[in-house]
Length: 148
Ligand code: ZN
Picture 1: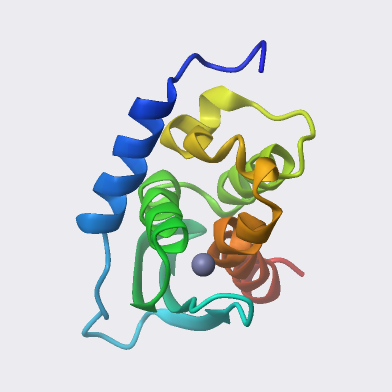
Picture 2 (picture 1 turned 30 degrees about the horizontal axis):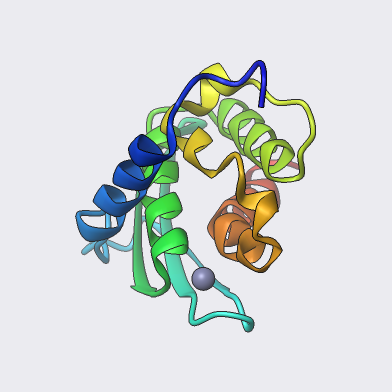
């Protein structure tokens, strides 16, 4: 689509494949300061636990583990890299822009970085849940635990 950062399909595929085969932050944390939320998608195999560590309003770390498809694993890997180090408000803004992109609304491609590889997910409606599962879970966790 015009206006989007130029990224050809080969590059998109290689970023998705790389984050699926070698995901970042895919592990179960070994301390209990993380908040956990389960996300699962009945229309696919996706069943991912997210673990989030927040200190002084900053996301210090995110880990995840579970069984899921390539779209779901890769986008979760990319999400962790984007959100670690951000404030709760910054993280929620990034998540909203990602959701807007998936829903074909206006979004800021610059803050989504690698995550724009999913900008044509709307062409495969069956994959929309896979692409948004953990982003929606992260949004719910942050809103439930840190906004009131
Ligand atoms: Zn899936």
